[in-house]
Image 1 (cartoon, one colour):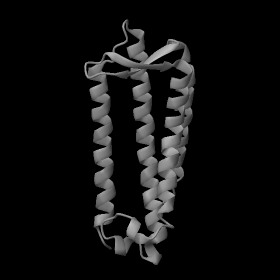
Image 2 (tube, helix red, strand yellow):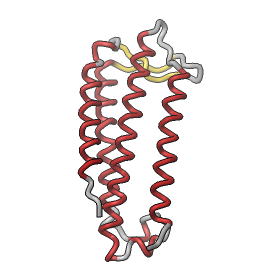
Image 3 (cartoon, helix red, strand yellow):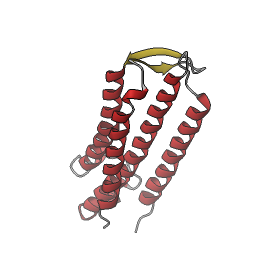
Length: 167
């Protein structure tokens, strides 16, 4: 059984870097930050700089923590509440610890991807607020979202393929 040391270290570094980025970006944002944008990239929602920084900082640390806690719960919830291919096989008592460790490791990697995505979104908000009037660069948003979704698809394929095979 693999340990989660490497993914936890990577996630810890990403979260620390993310929080440093959020704190360091405060001076790059106006007091009233455009944070919501319509389909054309035009700003249509604002919040204070401090609220934006706290919100993004909380999301960057809170979402990964939430997913990690959910993954650990797979060891204690009844099997019928866990949705896996070949659930009966993977949740047998002799495999449950291994299954929970794999799910936890994969959720930590997904959390890394989410932190990177949130950092990208925050960067785009900085760029948008440097324009007058604030305007979100839609090409960069689509590229970032496409990269994130590609990562989610790749992660999903690896995750499902692992549980599809029965030893």
